[in-house]
Image 1 (cartoon, rainbow, N blue to C red):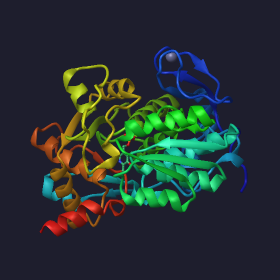
Image 2: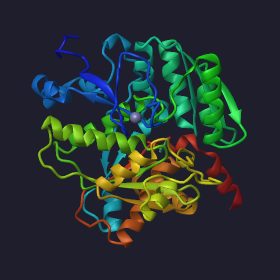
Image 3: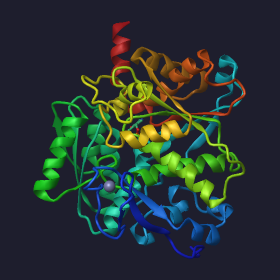
Length: 402
Ligand SMILES: *Cc1c(COP(=O)(O)O)cnc(C)c1O
Ligand SMILES: [Zn+2]
């Protein structure tokens, strides 16, 4: 293909979210050792603005990597892709009519490789790991991140090891094994899995790609924000409703919106209000938001069918809460029963079989309409972050109960 860029990536440095100390993107970095805070990638956006026309980027071959100037990989030969990104933005006409809304959409991330939007983050992280000469990657996961990491690792010839709770959906376990990853099933939650993965990483020199303990997964997920802007002719929607676990999608999109503004690519200064959706069996962000707290307390006894939301405390809790408040957003908890009902409603109203996490956004929307936090004429985006096909167990059980 003809080269249509001046420089592949405009990444300049990594910055600690807390103390703003700078780190090099050409060396292996994890998080800030002084503050235990995430590192965020900073780009020379002035140069991007000069060198790249938004319409050019939008006209490139489909996929996440069309936005490579604002992604961290410097040499295109290191990009590991399975076709992630550029998922459908679907107008929900029948739900609009039922709910009394006029401008409702779903961003359907279920068509990503490995059936969830985790593909975006792991494509970015594994590519950068390859660029930095890393050979072995390890991850603790509530489910989909493991499958995605395993797939991208296989694709690039890296070794992969995954720690997941033993009651993780069986699809996540088998999709990891089939692409050759080592899988350790843990008697506990993602927090226990994280402890064990961290230990193995230290003892045996594996690189840990846990949420926000490496800088680049959030960069892949950020591209959802670029796609949102492009889908609506560079005007951002009013409300984005997002099922939140570790918070990479939320933080990534908010970062994208700020970058888009600095690039001068937006038609208006209006920023979306973000909505964090969690399950009421594990809602640390909702609790902290309601209490006005700057951090989350560790959520004890976390339990929900939406396994991607079963994260008792995120490493980026402060960052997430800051972004949520900056956006004038809110946080909503929904029950597993609401999630199941919403899964069925998504199905029969729109022909979409969402992951429980994706269904949770529709359950939350019902609540936000009831409290009039959203207005009927607002442009509202739900995020279906994964495919319902990966979570059949609770549906089978539900049918057996009948
Ligand atoms: C991981 C996951 C989430 C939560 O994503 P974060 O961006 O880490 O908050 C939501 N839905 C699904 C399907 C997931 O796999
Ligand atoms: Zn720091």
